[in-house]
Length: 415
Image 1 (tube, rainbow, N blue to C red):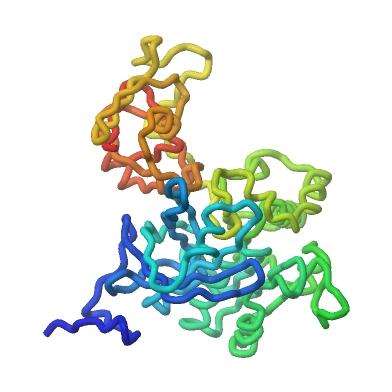
Image 2 (cartoon, rainbow, N blue to C red; image 1 turned 135 degrees about the vertical axis):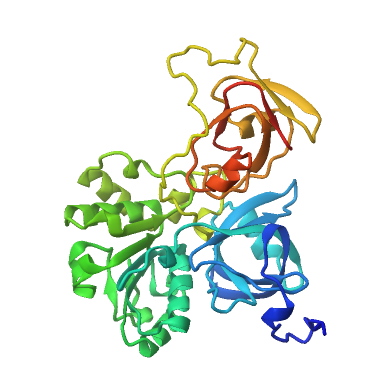
């Protein structure tokens, strides 16, 4: 007997009668919008027509937002937990000048639907099982931490986890009430709340200032024995990285995520002067948003853990010589479904070439992480250096990320 879902009645659907949501251009329905703070909202979704979500805590989804002037794609970390699979949520902060997130704030209401893809991403404690964890976050970087902590509370409430989150003021601390409730329910949860400033009206009795080693040791004396996850504005994470490195922490047990390309701090030596300067900008979350075309970067996070570049072919020549297949008139690109053929100079990404030819390829992070610009390559070779937005299996099936793939000769894309 087939059980007909009664969505209107809000009934929980039995797993046996529904399938997990697969976000390849699938639709999500908004079922709730929750005001978290003055500039942060949580949007709760369910699969259109029924179903449930299967993902790892800390993963993200990419939403297609139909803003005036044409759709944009924004990637948001899920703040919900997969242990409550019949809905999923993103917690979003609208930055000044944002387009996509502002549209969500002003337009998105229960009953509306969006096209989405995902979930995806590697930033999850399920990928790094340990006896003890330390979650460090600032601002809306708390969202993947909440997903992981909520999963622990549901499945392993005795987990040994230290949860330290920072905000500008007490009123900016996200999920404060829930965190304090979980701290009472989870016997091994150490909760640390820290704000940059307070007023007399705040009645704040927690820590004030910015994270440093003295405060970290005060809150989490055994931090060296913990698997550390960090998320927040890039200056915040840069400061945490340097602080831990200076303390001799084994960075193999440190994981972070951010929006945009991997920071220079991950690949270049950094001085204390640089970090201090960056730390002064911690409160300016917009600093971390300027790295990508997404205007809503802090609303959601994409893992920036560099899993190792995965070039699918040899990189373009760096000495000025033309690579094989380049005859001087440019690399020939054919977009088969669009019936468009064009050329581009060596070093141009497939995404840049597509835009120049007025061929639309959806893209979000444009740093090889979120996977939104994944396209099928049916002929030719490319050099691609991604940051985890595509799997080896997908590469084997002929897919590439247009934002970070550069043609090495004539290429045909199924777009």
